[in-house]
Length: 340
Image (cartoon, rainbow, N blue to C red; front, side, top):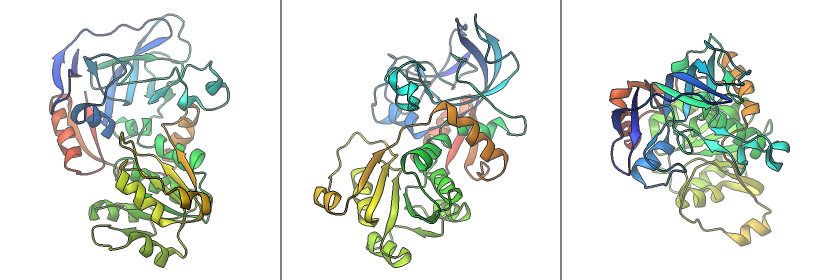
């Protein structure tokens, strides 16, 4: 089969012919219909972030596919089923899995990190967590549910616990952040979107943000947020992952506010400990999403409450996958989808 393989840090993945994997017990082999290109993939390419599986590795974790064959003991899916692959695959047996926190399972595996991913014609994955993809959702758009939608859902609903009427700032409106805007708006919050890209802010406004702010043209973002929304926001969801934007996030919080860190960074950020203590801030991390929540997200898409069309901004073939990486490096659009 053809696959885009990571062999080490560098500007491009290597397009190669590799052996087609066979499903083992409890596994299914999927024909990959589409796979989103995520910023996490770029971390492996450009920033030297180590993968759990030794290289070479096939990247890609936002997968929509069709079951092509199954291994022994598989009962959850059948050949021909259209499915989504959760980005985080838990063990299902540990303390965290048994208490509803499968997304931080210490034995969890991630497709395109612990095992070969979806930038290939076929992928083999555990069958137990596969999620049905309804026929009325186009897999070219629907594949991004696997991460770009479910990660925001988990952050907004389970970690930040956004409530109707709360004031929420979303810092960073890229491929994940733009959907944090959508889910916060659906939760009934008054949303202010913050980003340096005016085109992304325009889409954020269309998808539910009441106010938009560009820090490049706003001298004091925290002060401006207070002018627009009273004494600050109840919740900030930071979806960039940089010390600077984390510091910016603190400037917007009102007393008793909650800061939810969704963006990834290997750098340390400064913690204003006196403010955290005196103003009783809550700081939360958010990783991925439990597979059990995927059907809820799928249903929100089916009902049109969450939109995919504005978020999938480009499609490329496997041979053109370098274009997906380059678009992300330039900050163009939200999600590019690869069609193996």
